[in-house]
Length: 237
Image (cartoon, rainbow, N blue to C red; front, side, top):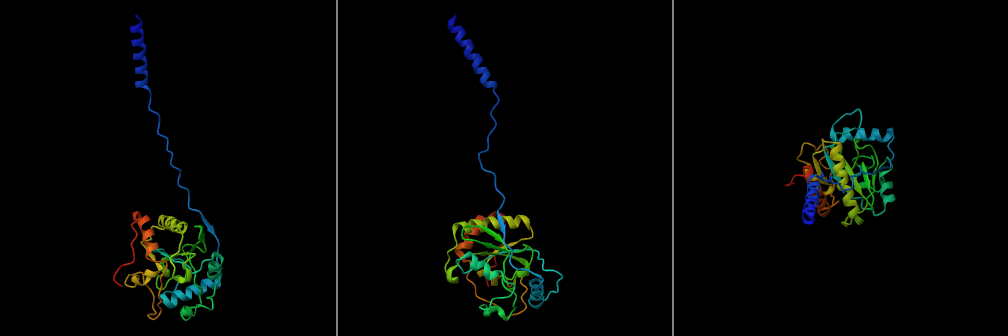
């Protein structure tokens, strides 16, 4: 009798467990946070806009009503300066600084970029993303420039892991916001784009030699953004 009762209780317990609904899976992965961008505008009055229009007319042969661009390229740089504030102050004025005699003949419009990334990885937006900045010869009218504080002496490949991650995140952000973007290149690769339809420079004598941000940094960025299918600068220049 006792054995029969125990067997009956065990059978009831087994049946109850068999009917128990499975517990829903709980996701323990942290939600992806939106990209943090700090707005830190450079000087961009009507004077700088006018100078930009003149640059577009002189170097690209286009007469435009505004300086808006359709982004096709993300172009990465380093500032060759280790200090954030010094880097910002070089981009902030509207007129080119007097020590830039190498490019002064082309225009007195100061160099600029849409973004500046600090050594700790903080991303600063310096101007509207779809306004043209002067940051690369021949490709300004189709590119978004990302400057990184570093590149000591314009020679040392010293950008930080935090900057690397910030650039990767920024590439994903920009490609998502601007599906028109096709290319991801480093400043040192810009002349490889001369044979592309995006190259617009009219002055054949206006070229500079660039080393930023270097093959090592770009290789790491390319590896982490491969899924986006962005094209690299064509080989063979």
